[in-house]
Image (cartoon, rainbow, N blue to C red; front, side, top):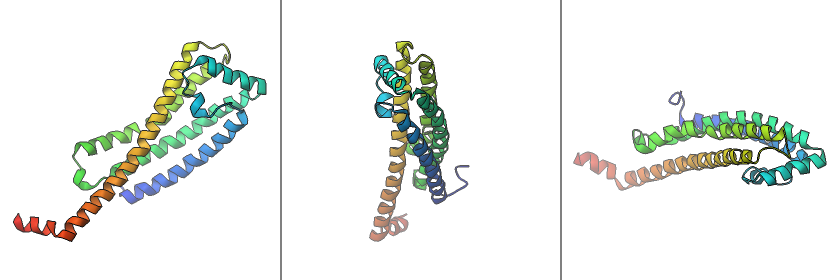
Length: 198
């Protein structure tokens, strides 16, 4: 599958998949705003503090928007599915972007591994939401220790998202650098000299 299409085709698919994921994100953000969650989601999800999370839930209970927040958690699964597809394709695009000269190297092996690692971000997101549903069953009285796996899954989610995006950018830069280097070699006639010398 990874060798069926060239890099340009992979990036075309990645852009389309990003568009779908972005649309899901906008839809999700609308629900999140209506839930009146008192802090940005990336703050609330990474506090590792049960008292604070219970405070967030208590605030939404007072605002009578906790039900909307539960719906937000469900809509999040649509975003996860879209992100899973996008990150899988992005990992393939990054792999296909690497120059052929790097095939068989450790860097190429790392690129292959990233095809499997990048889609783990929405998996961690799904696990985080499962924990949140347990917490939401008793929003102001859930066991305090549940805040630890909840935030741990969130941190891993954000970390994999960040690493995946940085890796995709790095692959493009590697290709650009390799192309520039080969251009300099041709300009200076190094390839011709090596061929004659060989």
